[in-house]
Image 1 (cartoon, helix red, strand yellow):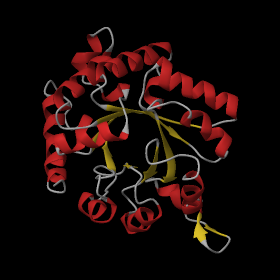
Image 2: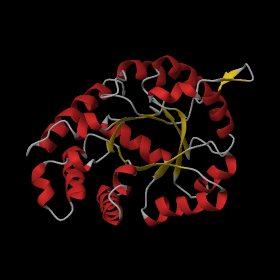
Image 3: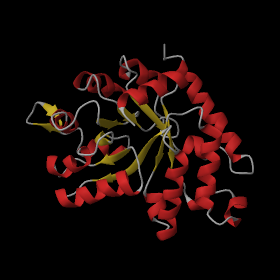
Length: 268
């Protein structure tokens, strides 16, 4: 999916919601455990209940890899079911020497047909470039993440001039463009979002941390929106685990609808 198509979908749906499919086996409703593929059946129900409310889905690879070969099959079926209308994100946080990154890129962009993949920048440009070589595919580069430990390294001041996350962003903007490069910026750092938007005024930001992790959507929009919206705000557990029983999908829809209605107020 290219940038223009993503923006058009955001404006049509009045939503920049991304739903994280962090499908944990122990949290799948009991009645689905009797099916042939409980993970896929859970995801399918969530997708059916929320298609019109979100613009992206983000399976977290750890929850699929943990199930072995069956988990990869569930992932493949899930991505196929998401289809081409929604922006799909492989939350894999990959990044390695060039030939290995090329195989990772081939895995997620060709074998599984994702639109994008999250990438760790620590090994530098040659570990990221193979992902950027695919047309109409996106790198979503880790910049300032939402977890508590993000302050351990990401906010360290480099050369007494700027924090590490800023150095990463400024360097990476020479590798890609707003057409194929996004940044991960945690909603738990609203005080940094204005600075980040000044660094990268045109790039999309993938923002985890709204909902269960305590991120403030209004503060995020105040400082993070640009003329193309420029945000994909992710909610995972707060939506997909809103209910535990037979009505889990209906509860998920209600939770997603609440967020989408808040987002609609910020879209002209």
